[in-house]
Amino acid sequence: MKPVLYIVIPCYNEEAVLPITAPTFKEKIESLASRGLISGESRVLFVNDGSKDKTWDIICDLAKSDPIFKGISLSRNKGHQNALLAGLNEASELCDISISIDCDGQDDINAMDKMVEEYLGGADVVYGVRANRETDTFFKRTTAQGFYKFMKLLGADVVYNHADYRLMSAKVLKELKNFKEVNLFLRGIVPLVGFKSTCVYYERKARLAGKGHYPLKRMISLALNGITSLSIRPIRIITALGFIVAVISLVGIIWSVAVTLMGKSVAGWASIVSITCFLGGIQLLSLGVIGEYIGKMYLEVKGRPRYIIEKRTEEEV
Ligand code: UDP
Ligand code: MG
Image (cartoon, rainbow, N blue to C red):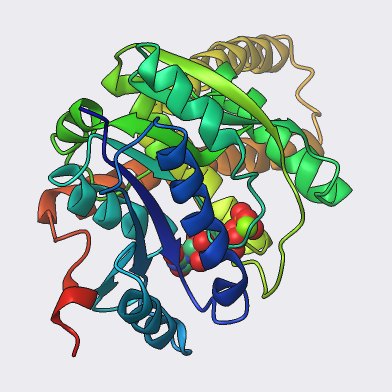
């Protein structure tokens, strides 16, 4: 039997771009089905992430016009990662393979053919990897690449230049459900699930319409979340730093006692002030990093639901 594919697409305030890209997803499914790679039961599943514009109305209209389109709507905006998870969980019972992609047309949907072929060849996870970043601004490119390198340095397993464009089999989706973290960073978790994986390369284009949702502030918060969700190395670095500073301080103490005993204690206040400031700075920074982890634990311990599905297109009349 041919595998049922679900294309899972989180959408937040995308009324400008959805009418342009939705038909392309439909065409892709139809062309994959006509090539005999996937089942005719394959679907496009939109997740409305609490949009404030007409996104949900557009999704409902699409669903009415063609059964290939389906949609779920979250009770409020929960962010890209949670919206994506909601869609993947919804799809996991219905599909054999899922492909997650953004709805802005930036990721080349023609890479899906290769992804499905890799799946049929035995891969359970296929990562879509950007072959270039020429359409990104210089700033976004350098910060994003710096982020991937930094993650590697901290020992977190992330696929370089891969965002959330990926194929996952139902087997992987089922295991993904056991990762219950509230601080969700899917591109760090999927490699932890394991199974046979491979990469497919594609060119990333500019957004077709509408505005991006990742200004600098959200990018920093995504990066910090990624690092602190996947690695405890920053805490270890603090411990090492504390040790080094302690050793240096010990040398300083011995030195100052020696100077005093020799009766040459005319040291100025500058050294005292600079040492105090330095230590104060390091302590505050360390507390901040440790606090970041405690804050994470606080959120995890509460174990609140990561999303709430308010309605489905099937229920709309
Ligand atoms: N998105 C979402 N919830 C949010 C923000 C974004 O579901 O709170 C969706 C958005 O509609 C898009 C995808 O996540 O399909 C990626 O967003 P965007 O294109 O703005 O990110 P970028 O390409 O700039 O990284
Ligand atoms: Mg985008």
